[in-house]
Length: 233
Image 1 (cartoon, rainbow, N blue to C red):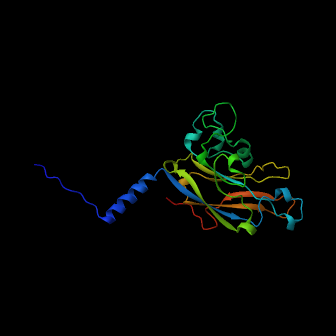
Image 2: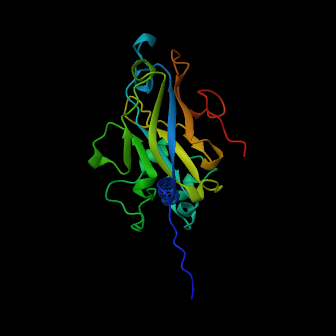
Image 3: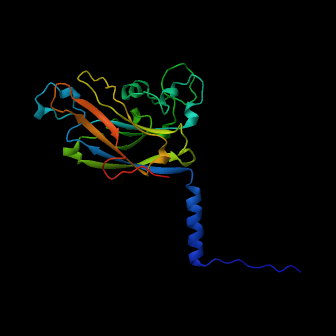
């Protein structure tokens, strides 16, 4: 006769099992937090003809875009310009970003980027019905109003692609000129995302703010200020 042994788990063991199951169930994505340092004023290009003390700027929309190797696989895909060595600019993104109603498998010939909604996160004041992606905060208003450092959570990235050399997180700023055109500013870029800590650090603002030709910028400062650090492993 085969002896049947009864397996029992104490209360502490039950909670341990549940915790393990919960962790296993969340393996698919990891959460990233964006830490943003700001100059006193941002998005000031439309005010560059004002006296320096009146170049207060306007709120700036920020878009965080998660790109995976699979997004670059199709021959001739417009997503090729979102590769890790591309020269894509903020103007390129805002001219060709996906729109509400777009489908990833849309083959109508349009030249817009084709990405899932859950790969795009925005800091914006636009109404949700006009947004393709997920809103995680309002547009930024500069250090004098928001504070010199702000934090925005909720950016999800596929954990299986963290160290893929073709995977990147781009951060595009919607700096505009007096005519409303988006400036061709290079984005902040994290490639591959797994080489960085869970908190991604960027800085936005304007260089030579009082000059005749001030330069808007966004930069990855993970290796520099705000306490950020790139992983060594």
